[in-house]
Image 1 (cartoon, rainbow, N blue to C red):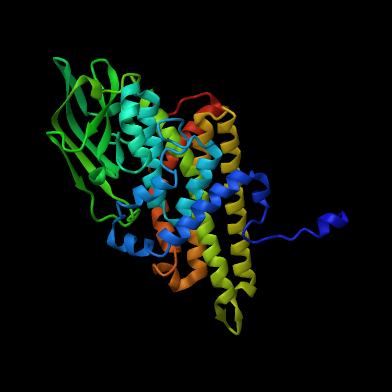
Image 2: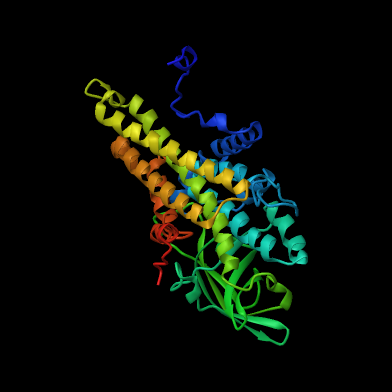
Amino acid sequence: MSRDTAKVAVRPGDFLDIDHLLSDEERDIRDTVRAFVRDRVVPHVGEWFEAGTLPVELARELGALGLLGMHLEGYGCAGASATAYGLACMELEAGDSGVRSLVSVQGSLAMYAIWRWGSEEQKRHWLPRMAAGEVIGCFGLTEPDAGSDPASMRTRARRDGSDWILHGQKMWITNGSVADVAIVWARTDEGFRGFIVPKGAKGFTTQDIHGKLSLRASITSELLLDDVRLPADAMLPEATSLRGPLSCLNEARYGIVWGAAGAARACFEAALAYAKDRVAFGRPIAATQLQQSRLAHMALEVNRATLLALHLGRLKDAGRLAPEHVSLGKLGNVNAALDVARAARQVLGANGVTLEYPVIRHMSNLESVVTYEGTADVHALVVGGALTGIDAFR
């Protein structure tokens, strides 16, 4: 061992010195979002979670920070790198999965759909206001009987003269009832198409889903479309197949890879601090072999998840990220975060089930995160198909 190496101090909060792998600009973005979460989210999120809501005004605050659609170019968007966007997602989800979901749905689903598949007129009309948080969007793909298999969707759109008539139902839609505009995907005689449906369109209604015990600091709704008439220019002209919505989902899944690492880190940090302070049998429980073993395994998973997210971010910035890479990242990082949350809950004992600490909230939220944007089983099959060359879905 060299003399210089021997002097390196290991920091519990960044065990592998991952900070060193980031640029000054990336660290600045991360620290700005971290400060926002610390000051604006953490003091209140327990109350939001218990009440089952998220303040709508948070969208404008996030827009003022440039976080909505931050990885998109032009139209009022920040044009940040994929890695910078990922770091923002990590910090947001360290606060709560619901806050990161708000940003993901707005930027990676609703805004990205318009940015990637919309007309120039649609982009100019919607994106600047959505980037500012003045207009909230939602993304209507999932249905009661069409989740992992979107090709089985029943929502249909048919032509009536130059107009379109939409009829169907969407389920588990984040931001649904508070959204000013919905991107709704429907089956047509010409393939699967996306439509921009403004709030207030005749026949378009929403109702919130209640009784959730996970992702409570988030609005989740059902969208009902009863022969909603839309003009021809409401259709996203460049999307003609399921490639349209699936490309949006891949953007959102990428953010989840980072977000899960943030949730895991928050649980680990809470467990580490608690273990140092909690005294049992005359000494801190952090002094016991059992708890040190738990903490070591949590630190391993947090650092491994963060490095995986960073690697995928660098691949995405280099134009070398495949959907299968994202599936591997989501599968690995969300499952790792669940393991960390459950271990942290045990370190905290009975205190671990109260909202005084963030652990049970993250643990509960992650049960939704492991399911939405593609279940763990689906992502395992995507990875398995890439490994074997055999599609096991059918």
